[in-house]
Length: 458
Image (cartoon, rainbow, N blue to C red; front, side):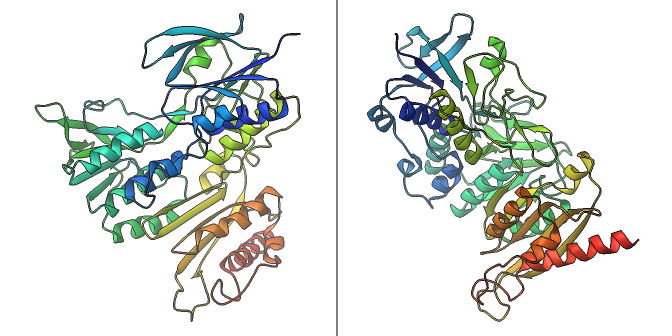
């Protein structure tokens, strides 16, 4: 009986987790993992903090090196890109990016974990020198080298989402002039506008210029072909020594599409709860796949390392002969920009409307600790609850130090389909250095419950 062979395309969170779990459960399984970059199993989310200097070494972002994977029995092929998949023959075609050699590798099972690629608007100058995307660790290395060169004084960040604002903070911490351009009226469009305005005020207070309700029309270049300014749709010219694209990402599904591996309605690879695609023997996990949103029931692509690791683990367990499922997502996310912490879970107002819910909202302003404590800082908690039933559908938290991680308690409540009345009764911890006697979560739940009751009576 021949030994089974697993091929994994992509060596970061999802791919590395899948390879490790499968090999752990079947020690005689041959595992080959292809990675086109120079690192495996690293924290892409940590790149802005290495760029800022908060993290002192690139190596600290790497959770497991190629050598560590190899010591666990995984044949890691670095700087090797898979350029084609033949699902009928059960082989992948690869190219060594340094040596230029090519070849094929057979598989019995295949895990497709190609991640995502940065969004690049189709405008003039987008491919000029001095324009950077930040998606993989190699991107961070290139951007860090540019910032260390000493020739950058002004940075324009295109896109006011999570990664764009985190890069803006990193550049600001390095003493650079930073401008963020975004089409939306408030940054981080997954938050409701009233919470987004709170975020915008905090960012501006740290010296970052926000240019909102204005998209990018083009990037002006100098005679040498290097970016010198960002031109907005309103005609404004923003001088730049460096341009960073922070417009979000899309699933990297080109290989899957070419191989006939079906995509879902969201644009990600379609998988079931066990991370199986619709092609026998082919699994997929990470930023390239779609997930089920537990509240909206819609198919969504959520590019987060948390989900990628879990999905890779599930795929690996199943490939290795075990049984595991990925139960879906609820849209929990958190970020910190300068002194502002912001987090969300569940549905925003717009998302709740799109999903067909009728709902009420409640928002409260409080402090992170007892108001008389010297470290008390402002916090706003917003809740969205279903009409009549009072089921918690979504929550958003924004404030300063000690604010955002409160979202985790609310994520648990949403995951378990609790009502705001039940949230109000939670036995949350209390001590003056950590919370007021009525935690802001409980105050918001009380106000949301009152809104539900008033709506029911009307």
